[in-house]
Image (cartoon, rainbow, N blue to C red; front, top):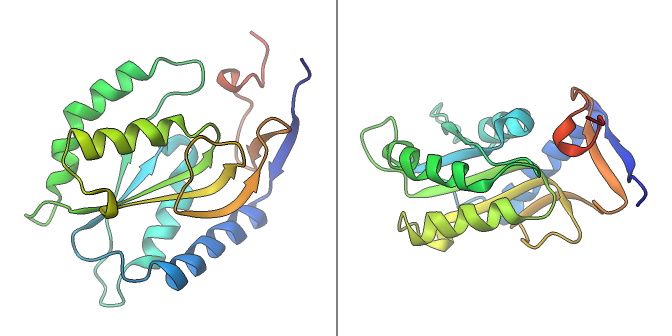
Length: 182
């Protein structure tokens, strides 16, 4: 089996994609966020930049920032059971918020949605175990594979993970993604 070619994402391309997400959000979802909205950075080791810039940009102009929290998800070679268990423990605290009231809306932001499996179990747990209304969850991807099982609400760029491996300008080769042979 041949190794997919590298889809290198420069700093300029990453920034342009984030700006595209912000623009599309303002065009299509501008009324989604309110004071009881939290941005959830999915996989903070890859999605921190996009989540932070996106949250700042969609925050209201009154100076109140939309908070960002994170959810860890497994790499392709990791078992998702541990991550689901951790979310069960942490989500009640995440949902509680910092302002003295529970968050009601959530914007899940991920830099790269490859198979979509992580978004599937995250959204299922949020709806089925934590009683979040599906309409109160907005899913965002800077890059989404065209063959992803999960289709995000807001996507900046599409690619084929069968043909290309995402590689951001700041990223080191990663054994979990087959970048380095063990």
